[in-house]
Length: 80
Image (cartoon, rainbow, N blue to C red; front, side):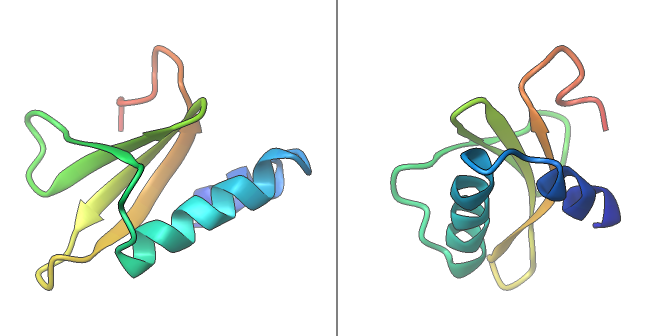
């Protein structure tokens, strides 16, 4: 979670509010308009694709999602 906050802190002023809004939407369950896909080989792990960012999420027992990783799309995005 510390790395997630560090990544968010380094975002530019244009992207930061958008990313924070997407994270709030994921936490609150407002998933309309988000491209969500289950990650193969990972149980209860999903990715949300929005803009050039990839949000890696875990599904909790109560069916809620929380963001566990965030990165810009590159060759190492899904290596965690």
